[in-house]
Length: 416
Image 1: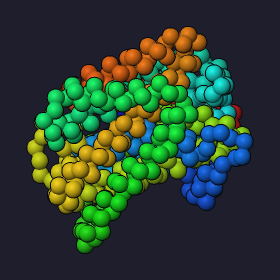
Image 2: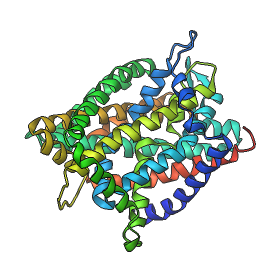
Image 3: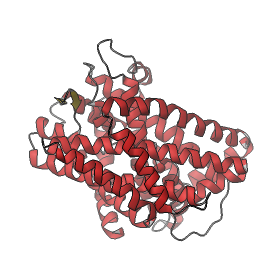
Image 4: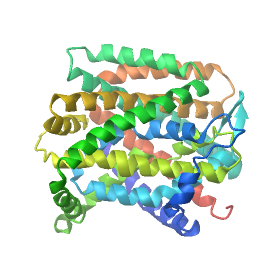
């Protein structure tokens, strides 16, 4: 699995960088037009689903355990420099996030009184490549049902087991039970749930992280020096800067999901008339996820100057160590609460993304019921699985989704 992942990413990364730069030029640096981006949050009177709700859905999917354990894992394996490359790729792929959301909204369709869309729709209706659209939809369902949700459940389980003497399988059953209460109530209830949850979970983590950083301001110059030195460690190119570069980009893409197409699925649910606005809203989500949440995680971990030798690492062990070092027992609870909220919000968003693509693949509602049942089973089973297997599976599936979506976005170059 590791070899397959490396091969796929060796193709995905150059393509993503090239297409990102291409659309940065074609769209005249749209990711730097910050005033216009923030104005996109204004709601149209006729829309029942607000821009903030679609943003909350996307943030729920993006601010998962990848923002905590995934970032920690990248630093552990690739060094502090992975954060620099994460910043770079996030800026480069912002136009891709804009475009996939713009197209998802433009080609959305109404089904069961709700608008749905995403890459499977604009690949099918915009490019008339129905086979490729079905492949994308199928891979996404597999990725988000079997991999993304699994990572979230696994990390919640590991975090709670470290706190309390509870069997992991029991935690998985609890996660699944709570998920049932949300996903069986439909899109509007999921949106309202996430609209309330995302600001709370973000605020808890941001305030705690900023307290640690401001308490160690004298270390910040050295922190940046360590990041840049690691990012450009040309003395050990094979195992140094190259590995740091690859891992940083992988984790950047995993955390903000730009180029994968999932942000567009949330944008497509909006009833507003402006596709341009939906694209800009999702760029705001990229900046918030990567440049705030992921960066705060990285800073706290690097400031802890950890020295740990871990085997079957999930990544959350490092995050927990860093916050506990600075905040004592309070730090453990901050990480535990953040993990539970971040991961659970991602489970809900991941389920919605899968449901939309099931609806694209078939009109038979029985498959939606089957999806719900499988999701619940997966949440239970993954609570006791090996973290290494799950992360490798995620890397492979994300690369496949990115390859299909980037190809599709590039094919739209003459249609914009």
